[in-house]
Length: 292
Image 1 (cartoon, rainbow, N blue to C red):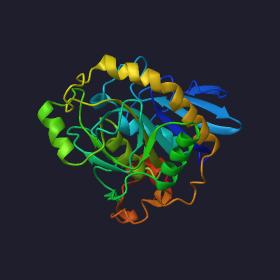
Image 2 (image 1 turned 180 degrees about the vertical axis):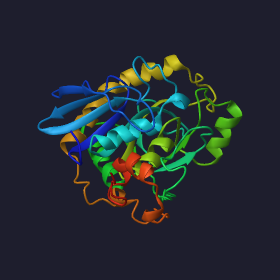
Image 3 (image 1 turned 30 degrees about the vertical axis):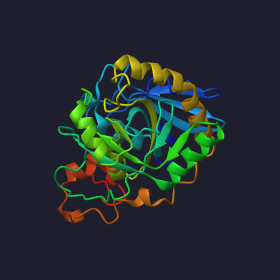
């Protein structure tokens, strides 16, 4: 599997590839210029449609959000030819009407992470992608239609505030974020969205609500046990949604996300060193032909 021949990639919990009727074809280790991805990629097929899976937090959830090698993960999907990536994650609700077991498909994000590498392009070439709309409208719509078709309670659109982690919010922080009119809180979406935009892959988030963070009076404070409990409860619905969206994946080949670097590369091609050109060929081959 290489080139643009894999319509969809899914990153999330290690059990997401256990979707009814999907055939797991192989496990693949992908080498990247940014180190090792979180795990091997599971390559599967559903009614003739190729799909790639990756456990974001590694085997047995052994990596916390700040320790995830987001660059390697996204680069690996790109190297496998993935066109659109769906990030599945647990989130806290920042609104009274968004209950645990609800699902949100965010279309905006606020990035409060502090110490992650969230770009492939630190030095030459200089690349500045637009993040005005950080997720893919076509993929968002496909996820929403799939979620409603399986009977999920789902909200299309909303703002995801992305914190560093691995600690959860203080009460003061949670109340501050609420005042910013956000919808959900988590630790992964912003970094994945930025890197997917730089990799010219469509990106969408399937955010599974598990708790009310710590802002809501009378509710139990968010705990790891609570999150795991609700993720397990929501996993079957999530798998049904993913099966539907794999089968109904829109044609993303002409999506604007797939050409996000066209106006973004500021450095003249002749000024990019050959070693960089070759190292980043998976990302830049359309703009900086491989040499040597």
